Amino acid sequence: MASDPIGSFSFVLHSHLPYVIAHGKWPHGMDWLNEAAAETYIPLLDMLNQLSAEGVEPKLTIGITPVLCEQLADETFKREFEDYLDMKIRAAREDEVIFRRYGNEQLANLAVMWQDHYRGIRRSFLETYDRDLVAAFRSLLDRGYLDIVTCGATHGYFPLLSQDISIQAQVKVALRVHERHFRRRPRGIWLPECAYRPRYEWRPPVESRLGNKPYLRKGVDEFLSENGLDFFFVDSATLKGGKAIGVYVDRFEALKRLWAQYEKEFRPREEEVEKSPYEVYLVSSSPEAKRPVAVFTRDPRTGLQVWSGEWGYPGDGWYLEFHKKHFPGGHRYWRVTSAKSDLADKQVYEPARVVERLEENSSHFVWLVETILEEHRQQTGREGILVAPFDAELFGHWWFEGPRFMKLVLRKCQQNGRVRVTTCSEELDRRQPVEVISLPEGSWGEGGYHFIWLNEDTVWTWRHIYDDELRMIEMVQGLPWRADPRLKLVLEQAARELLLLQASDWQFLISTFAARDYAEVRFQEHHEAFNRIGDLAEKIGRGEEPGSAEWQYFEDCRQRDSLFPDLDLEWWERLEYPPS
Image 1 (cartoon, rainbow, N blue to C red):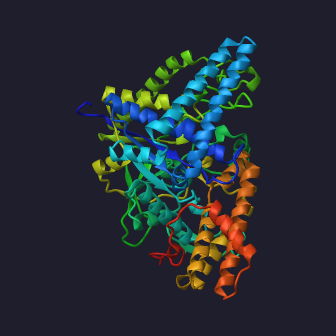
Image 2: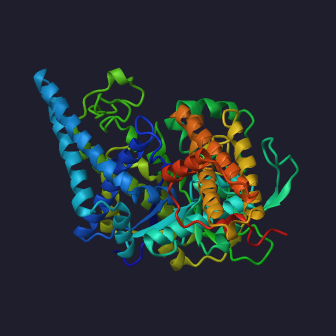
Image 3: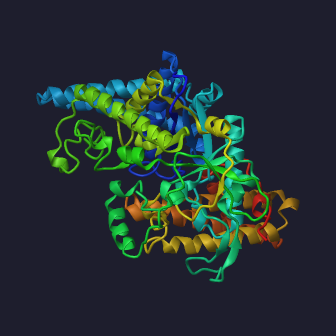
């Protein structure tokens, strides 16, 4: 390591999936979790442990959402994941037989590649990690390689939730889950969709039982401060203004159409030149003397190199094509060829050619990081911190070669010595920022605002969420659950259903058309479950005895949605530190 690095660099990965256990399998449901574990989580764990074995310190900041932690630790996932891997190996074997029968040796060799790949994943899962991926991540945390941050309990979209108590509950559940799985409190949080809202008089954006009068809301930063969290992340447009790049539009045609409608009325904020994404600031939107919270900002230039469908590395013609699959097994045998070529025109994948592309792309990325940090040092005289946040599933799932790319980047940064590879907690301790700023409302969606999650196709979901948020608070405040263990158990399940209802995934999937029917059904299931369980709670509260069918429905929901065993109803009873 050079004695005087030009600055610091941190990959930040956000790992999240909605709760899918007992909610379908294929094409939407459990196989999402199986795919993510096989294609992203285990390859990332393998990559980090391989670097450690080489003597390279693989420093990385990673967010693992509470709802994902609960699923990875669930025995149902562990059992089904083994079956899934066996199925993938068997399908690749069957593909090989068919390809050889028709004399296609190139495809047959790729089928062998997939057999070897999934056998390796299976070996890592069973032998290296002993079926416990959460413990594997915790081991890297304990060794000082990872900084694991948390997120909202179910990835609820904080700025659009109507009750401060709902945000409070999302944060407190998250801290409880993180401590249980990782045996320490997190220092940072990835706000769901990087969505932030300061304190102000907020008006509900849709009609519901709330009415439309504005009322004072706490800033998102206040919940973090009150619960001992030290930092979060924002998009560069949230910090500085200007046009947000957006991270999803390139990958979903439906979002391109939505954005075209929204853009007619959207006006980006004027860019503020004095704020830099390569500095760490403190944020406070509270007039009270609350401890401000640090904010790290996404670097737009390195983000474009990985996220952009047109400019990004994953669009290189030699990398594995994501969309074209061979059925029934679902293995992929073709390369990107060209970002604009039809699926019918995709050429056969050539693994040997990928090595050269990875070498070139990783070297370019390291050069870009060094160039940006050198520019910042020359302009300011200070070391900068370049934060490169991505959805973890981009590496391995969307971009098959992504974990190998990241491995090369981390290794080259350490070998070059010009950049300090770090975690966000380490960098915060090193810098100890003192400048306090204010931030506007925003997210890392296209345009930097909420349109992906609140639009004409999703407005109906928010009406239900707002009504159910109010009902949950009224039940916890009005029913004698402390004196009745059965009532307490029922209300706890109602809280789980409300948390699952609040997941931002449902609006995202509806807007992208990626799994619209599934998302709409899931949303309605949790809305119905919350209200039927609420009816049960109120009947008990009136001193009436529910019928056997009502109890059976409750037990079925309790078995199906069995996450968050240690939530506390007091989080819905009163708001800590209400705004004044």
